[in-house]
Image (cartoon, rainbow, N blue to C red; front, side):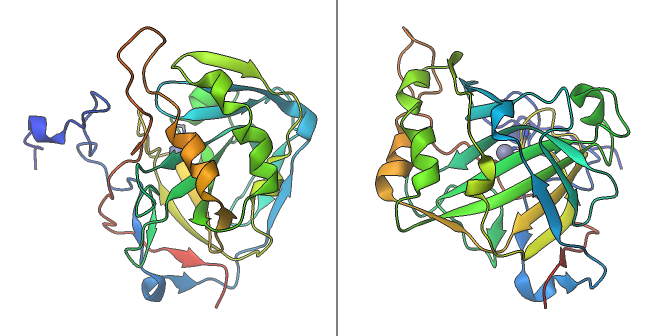
Length: 259
Ligand SMILES: NS(=O)(=O)c1ncc[nH]1
Ligand SMILES: [Zn+2]
């Protein structure tokens, strides 16, 4: 059926439609724990990051990205649901104005105050990230939920640098950071076939969502909320609620690596 376009699909933050017409594997989704299917053939996820591949922090006007040198296989993930190893390109977060919401994915319809995404691309099959973005098996994103609790020591080194990237299109050098300190020790995860949650929204992502959240404290979440969507000199708009609404599951099954 031809999609009837309506301006209601346009999200104020971007100009692209909220649901891709014809999209059958869009993200984020609600993960209904009881509907996820244990897959005994899922392997443990292997994570090996070289902290010296860290380059800089960049406020891109939608989130802040910590970007990595992805010109070699020094920071990679493998195993899990993946058929190839994938190279780390960047990580970023999504968060709310209040602690009651902010994550993109939900678990049994529960929102977390924030969600970390570690974005990787399949450099075995594709020559560039830009090409991998267009392929069904091109990307792998690890999602980690953030919950309110104790101060996260590893995150604090990142939080201390955020005032330097308060405005859109500001960058600060950040040359040694090991993002594995942000990934919970519990190996359990859910996985499903989805999409990028920001433009170009392409259906190229194997999502790997960790079951266990990490704890961060209120000051650390407030530091995220001090960032701005706007450039220096523009009327200030706080960077909050930078998450996409939930998308229909359609004909997909979420698998779990645990029983
Ligand atoms: N939020 S996300 O991880 O799906 C993403 N990464 C790059 C663009 N969008
Ligand atoms: Zn994201």
